[in-house]
Length: 427
Image 1 (spheres, rainbow, N blue to C red):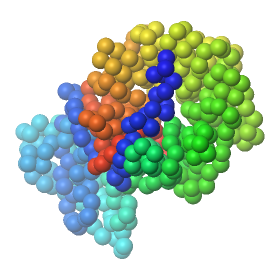
Image 2: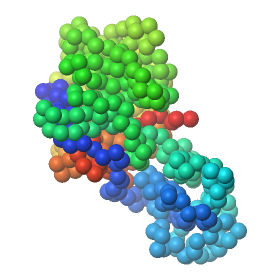
Image 3: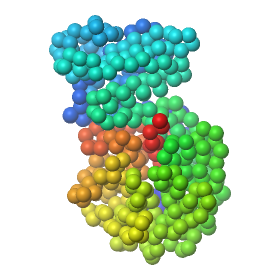
Image 4: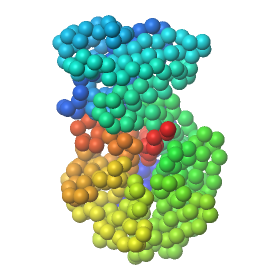
């Protein structure tokens, strides 16, 4: 139980030793054996500082759903569907083909792309996107979203963002930073710097704000910050623990763990009025709340059964139900977007891994193979789970597909990265 209580602070104080570089890099660690073969031809026309086809291919591969052909295997490089010989692409076992071209349009670029079904010999998707030079990667993420949805039927999440925490220095000289970046780790921006720990960032439902815990006054307090303007307010700074903020789906309330009345309990704060409502009342430690997608209940971690397990609190009735029974450690629960599954940190024989539990059957499956995985955060389309883990002596971000078949890592060039949070859809 002592380790459980210290996870939220030890992750910052013990594992952060150096400053993360501005951007994170991607390392594919395991590809899915069910990935769909797809060929993405370099776009014809204007030469750009961003290789759009490469960004699209990297996005699709990172999802675990697709296996892009390497460029050396591309049998030709058409830029329009009329120039495609489908028989050639069947010969290299490509199920789908993406072609496109780029042309300048004033100070912007006009990007036309097409998605083709190789075996059906038909065009599934065609669109023109206009982007200024600073938005070329965003255009590639948008195109990736459209391709992903056209083939899988699931909305793509490549245009979303992630938040994470880094630190610089060691010992008493650590400097902490809160960053936001594109979902692929690029275009990182530091939105807060502090000489005290920053923890538990959580996105508002519209993606405009982050709630987080900061120790800048030498005791924990919860802040809400606008990610565009930088303006922020202090939401909770009671004596004792102020931790684990979580937004309600409608953005009107913030759940959190407070020890204002003794033991850490789950509270709801009305954001407009700043009124607090205590939900749990138990001699155990209750923490790490997270709302169900329908907003009618929340899951939280409690040691009321003797060790950390996940419980559901029904907001209408006030009834509490235990959800996890596999093993003696299950914490940091996060619902899948459809509300049918729960992701968590589960302690197994090898250590602490990200696990998925089907809520109807109760079946729990470990998705990762790390020893010190923590802080799971689910993509808004439910396809991937982002988490913090160890790579050698460094803290990095990892991600695993919802079925556990594919995974990748997002290490920084230097130093440690922790406390990831995946944003909601941004439009």
